[in-house]
Image (cartoon, rainbow, N blue to C red; front, side):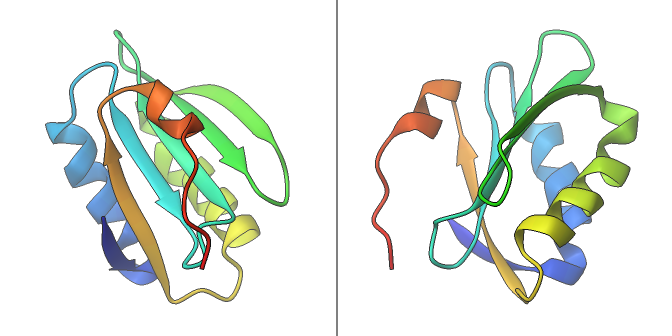
Length: 102
């Protein structure tokens, strides 16, 4: 788990997703861990985006549209944040675990 500057978030996400195998992904969390965005890889070149916080949205997008959709979600979920927690996950079941709230 790493705190990532929100200005470099998109490049960090792309770099981490290149190293991630199916069915893994990335979870972006607020500092207090009460809002988040999950990016899960699929077998083909598509990605699953799950937003949980202000809105509960799940969408399947091609990897080429990741930048546009992620930018919209980050502004909605982390409006005043300067840093975001980036967590690598190896399986989608890890998203359902209980986290310590700060």
